[in-house]
Image (cartoon, rainbow, N blue to C red; front, top):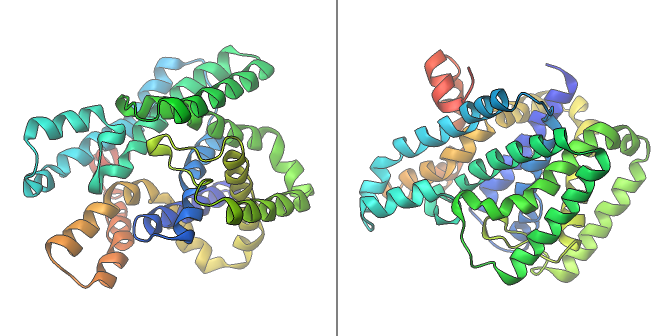
Length: 316
């Protein structure tokens, strides 16, 4: 495995563990995690993108990779909707098709999938049509629109969380820029990352909970300050991983595999907990452990078969 890909997998592994923790706990640690855990995944996606003029091919590729597993997830969840029994089939179907903030309970986190899909498509288009300065300017405009949405129109719920794309695009862009320019610079001047990280910790301590992000509900914290702190924390984690991952061989392998399975964990950790904890009343500690263990095992099984690899992982 190439070093940068291993680093990315470990990065995603940390991110998905933060997602799971954030869905189990409340308090200041949870608030801190919410400041960066979902932006982390948009940052990683921006780091990985290679803009292309083959728009149809890119659309097809990401439709298979993101939307097919998204559809399969909800097909698999039909029994849970039936068990819940508190809403009509038509109502649940509408929520699933509309997506975004209408997805609740064990399906709530899946808002991320369609938002990421839209973000990738729009960013790829902008990156191939605009100059470097034009792209940077468009990201600033997006951020301004996102904050305006959060302050004045936060109650408006759009399909697939289209409005959240205005915030996710600049985060996505930071990952893209980091790969192009910032990686070598920040590796050379590590002290900049360290200082901004500790500044972010201090700002968080004195401004929480106002600073905390919740992208799903278009709550972006304190304008620009939350964005700065979120990005600083992500960059610090990235830098720290590059330093310690080589010295933690077995832990790195485990975290990298969890990172590879991060999308399956994203989809199925809440349903697993709901089934084991709420329906079967299994020991809470076992249920919590299973939120990671069961999706990782599913990922292992799905990788063994070409059809399941396509349907559940979007890999062909």
